[in-house]
Length: 115
Image 1 (tube, rainbow, N blue to C red):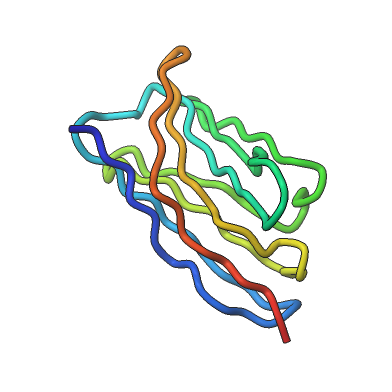
Image 2 (image 1 turned 45 degrees about the horizontal axis):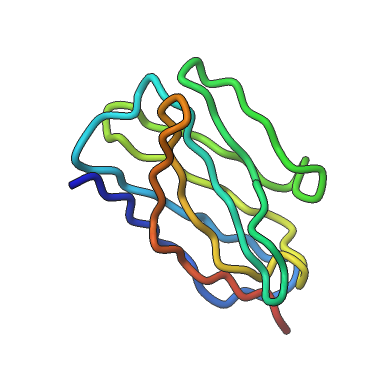
């Protein structure tokens, strides 16, 4: 019954920006960790960024200083602002919510960075 639905993916040129959003339903995740993962072609899924219930954030080294994760607890959403995009950022991006080990996943949204 819990659903995480990503949106905002698409094609963007290198150096461009894109904003991903994730809408959660079925329960509230205001006190839980939420984050974004991605899986590039031929690679394993990796953590991109996460945000705690307090608003503290953490980023993968590969996206640090370029991406910003945020959340709106009232709307039960989490977003990922991606700037200065590189071709290596191309991947399917997945929204995640973690409830003390119980993980919920969205179906993913494709981000393609290409000229």
